[in-house]
Amino acid sequence: MKANGPRTKRTYAGSRFSKKDLQEVVAGIRGSVSFGATLNAYTSFNIGGPADVLVEPADVDDVRRLVKQASARKIPLFVVGGTNLLIRDGGIRGIVLSLSKLRAIKDEPGAVLYAEGGVGMPTLIGHAIRRSLAGLEWAAGIPGTVGGCLVMNAGTRLGEMKDSVKAVRLVNMKGDVMDLPAASIPFEYRRARLPKGIVVGVWLQLQQGVRAKIEKVVKEYLHYRKDTQPLAMPSAGCVFKNPPNDSAGRLLEATGLKGLRVGDAEVSTKHGNFIVNRGHASAADVIELIGAVRRTIKQKAGVRLDLELKIVGEA
Ligand code: EPU
Image (cartoon, rainbow, N blue to C red; front, side):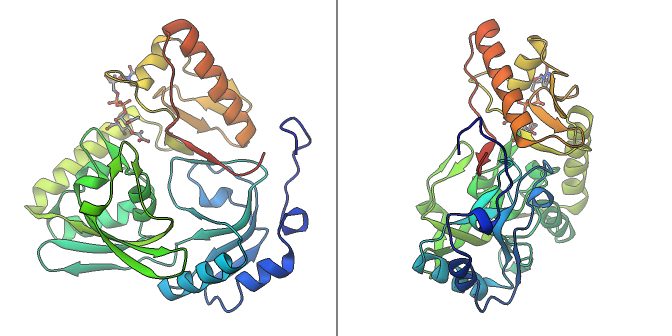
């Protein structure tokens, strides 16, 4: 489809994969399976077209079966769960996985927590507080899943995922479970270099601390973020990486871009590095707004802004 062609929302009916192949990939899956499901509800932006098939596997064995069956038919898999994500309006071809049913947290000796990939970061922080475990305070206010945060090495000024990761459990593309020690994973700025596969769990090495102190840091940080970021509106977190020694939000403010709109997509008036969905923004609106921002910043400040937001799917 041409970039400027009509924007149709395609399900398997218009997919390059046959319905028969897609049905074979999900055969025997015990979790939920939904053909043509719209993905907006699975993103923090509340934007996104349909998946050919959306699967929420019941457990790790279900993930293994799905990966094996998809690999055998060369049908791609994409995992939703990160928050720095924009799914285009045409949606995603192939299988989309949500690990929403993989939500177990296990306490292990030595201040270690094992969290399944679909555990929400706020839930994990709550659990750590109840156990008086310190180390995740930096993530207060991040709405993504543990798996999503791991894959993109999510971070804030206070810390990042790699500071706490002890090991990662991944289902590789053959459907085998691999446990990878953190030392074997190259972590980069907002990215973990992992073998191809699905992150189904993460061991986090935390520190035994004092509950009241941990709670205080989390509350202060949440307040700071609520005061400075538009957390009450649908968004995908920060859109741009911070340029060296500067803040993208500060640059957008200094360039007068706060409040700029395309359709219902708006550069937040609260924090310049957030684009918020004021109701019915499309992915095309957001992408057009990003283009306008980058051009203006290049012209006025001479800075090339790189995307932190990951854009996926078909236009
Ligand atoms: N600022 C402005 N105007 C704005 C936004 C920021 O002048 O609209 C100024 C602030 O006043 C401050 C400076 O820029 O002096 C830095 O701002 P802030 O503390 O908000 O931090 P940031 O560098 O903009 C980073 C992360 C955020 C994270 C915050 C807080 C990146 C790209 N951004 O933002 O992460 O929440 O620190 O720790 O790393 C994200 O990753 O999705 C994200 C939002």
